[in-house]
Image 1: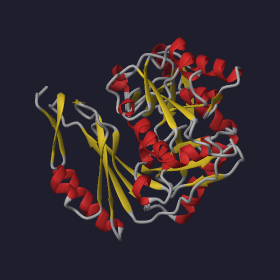
Image 2: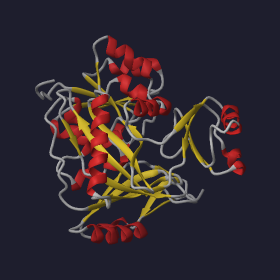
Image 3: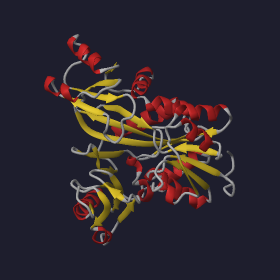
Image 4: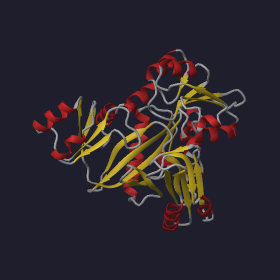
Length: 388
């Protein structure tokens, strides 16, 4: 696509979560007609899309028939029926990112082998088909404690991952084909959002630092700019650019990294879509990750990724002990703080640790933004009319 003619352009988004919603919010600025496929009639994106289609994103027929309705098809989650996407591609439909890229990243084993083959630093690993295969490899001395088990497919938001510290932890092994990784001594976790269009233009966003909630295994805070060295930041940006180029990918790619105890930059995993680690870009970067994704998949010039103000992003998560119709506390008090931008995803039902929204806090310095973010974190509570 060389020109943007939005009066008739139909964009299809597979899955209707908050990422789809925020992508549609950008698409509407350009008068793009949007279609969403999701099984949940109350999904966040379905409420604002031009057209909502009810259907299972893992069902071949649902995905195939949906894809035939639109001019450009993209997705906001990896768990999608690949065979339907391949069939659509073979018939000349535009799927971006490409189904082969999605197929590789869907499988953490293939992802790890891709990094190894292309000389991209990542932790040592072994692929095991079952729990008995893992136990046998331990006995043979091929796997050593402590290690991290990741299911090859289906893991999301911290699910499908087990940290096995010693023999007593073996009862926590997950059933299924897995990647067994050496447990790295992690000093910091960082991420880079990178974008590429069909012309081969590549642009990266500033490196962000991720702080995790140890209970939910979800991002608790995101800091931009990060506190890593310039050399480490250059390496992370270089590796992210190399990955998206090797994949020949169009769209936005999120690459998560570890900084180990020796200061080395090591790739953890990637996601071929807008990502939680890029939500701050809506306000703090000239071009948001969602606008950039549209630019990339439509082969338009990529936008400016300059940081406008230091920012801290916090996830709004469902509180423990509450499940049911959502009730927010502290929104008004938080909005009274200068530089606070609140995004609620429109999910009507809360449950413990469910992502219900996010807040980006901007200030003249990262230190000031952090102080404000801590205050917001104490103020906003996601409860329910019913306790679980």
